[in-house]
Image 1 (cartoon, rainbow, N blue to C red):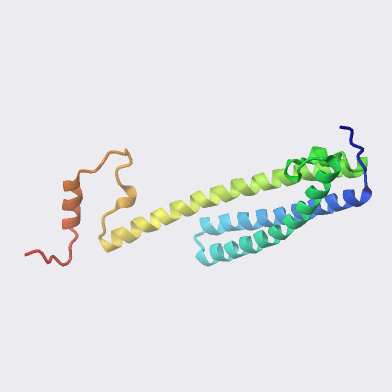
Image 2 (tube, rainbow, N blue to C red):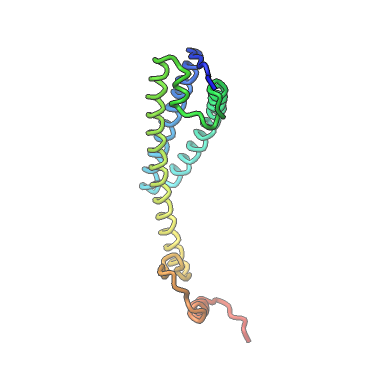
Length: 178
């Protein structure tokens, strides 16, 4: 099957503009995620929550960008004779004039790098939050004289039922057994 590719500046302009919008969004998202990490490290709860709201707002803006992306991929897929979900930046570049194709490939690489950095920093923030929450859980258990299940035996061995019962018995505040 022979397919004639139509190289159009209109599609090229649309692709490059879309990638620019994606890059701007990814930069904003990275900035917020980095600031959230600083807030977590400084234990500034209000700032952590404010950054979470910023992340949610940016994710909403990114969802709107997906509509444009879907339109571009559908158009490219139809011109290439392939399903939209299989369109790659390299196949899309075939439809663009050389200047637009080079710009699209460059911006796509930059976008992938930014998104990888966002994912990495977000993963670090999640670990930091888990550590902070575990520490707070530990403190609350110490203050409340509750059993410290958060820092228990991590070997995976089962705890004997009698040991659990004796631990529970030592923390009873009201024993209604006759």
